[in-house]
Amino acid sequence: MGVQVDGRTDEMIILKNEAEIDGMRSSGQVTARVRDAIANAVSPGVTTKELSDYAGELIKKLGGQSAFFGYRGFPGQICVSVNEEVVHGIPGRRIIELGDIVSIDVGVKYEGFIGDTATTVMVGVTDAKVIRLVRTTEKALGSGIAAAVEGQSIRDISSAIEHMVIEAGFSVVREFVGHGVGRTMHEDPQVPNFVSRGHKEKLKHGMTLAIEPMVNMGKAGVEVLEDGWTVVTKDKMPSAHFEHTIAVLKDRVEVLTVC
Image (tube, rainbow, N blue to C red; front, side):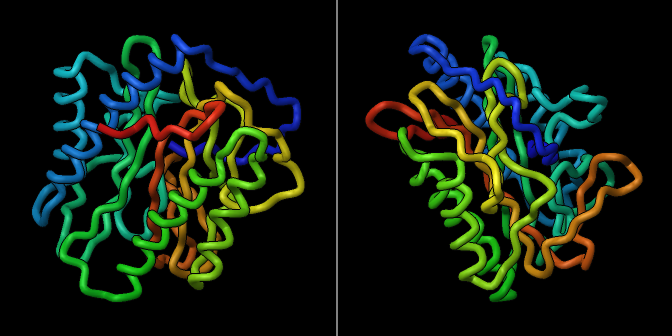
């Protein structure tokens, strides 16, 4: 679940010890299992609420709690964002149709730690540009993760993501960004998907981050609907979203939201 840019500079980054990173691994694995199960359940005729309800049942079965449900009043177990919906889509009566792209954003609190991950599912998509949008966004996530090396900076992650997106002819959402994650959903630092003046923090062993490019087919502008949550593209063109929780370690970066 992306966080809105707030321009703060007085960040308090929480470095995790080995036991805490181990806890993050466990929560990440549970979260990944839910993400993959819901992604596999996306099909024509299914409503976004049915996907959310299924996620709630599975999270409970696995011994976790939804990190999203009730967060600042959010009413869903997960976020489900379709086509022009960028992030934070509230599950409801909307029916998935052939040709849709569906972002599944899952947050699970498990044994005190939170995993946060997202994927975008293509439902019988044949439009070559839409396919390229989704694949570029996933590749941009990979580039951002590869740049998350100890001694590098947050800006290096941002640059890697933005370069790939712009090179492909798409736009990076600027109002919502990635973030630190751990015992709470949104920790410092913020992790933009674009290069900004700030965000020069050095990456250190023990940092756990949710890296999540949000990429628009058209212009970068977005707006929040009257429900106070759902973020959509201003030009109503499609948007894709991918996310992993990662840990910065001394000798490598580790993706935690994998099964």
